[in-house]
Length: 124
Image (cartoon, rainbow, N blue to C red; front, side, top):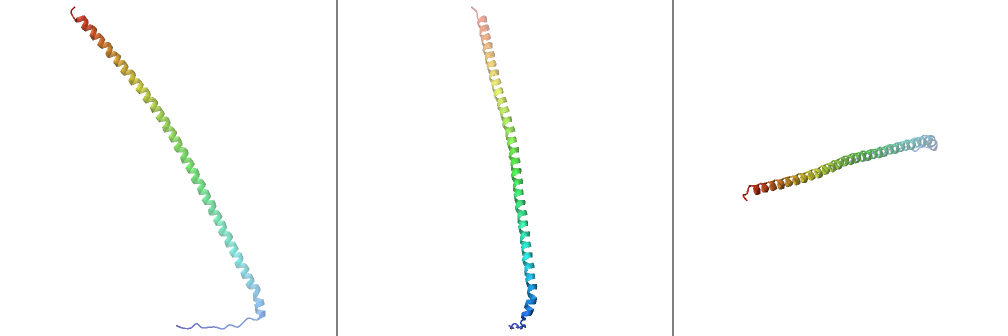
């Protein structure tokens, strides 16, 4: 393993440091400004993302409300259809009862007529 080479540098004089100090301070200020701008940009992006998420949630809520309304309308339509069919069933049941009553009366009348005919045909 090789040892790293150590390079010695000449120390800067006070005049050189004073000459370079404004340049270094300007570079630091630029870096801080760039970091602040970048941070602001990131915050703007986050706000836009939050807005997009909020907008998507509102759209989802709106779509759910629309679906609920559609299902409620369909449910009401089905209920009305069921009510109509129940009414129709009740009417048909009543009609069936009436028909059987009429049939029963007809049979009774026919039976009475047959009995009368038999009585008339019987020799006295």
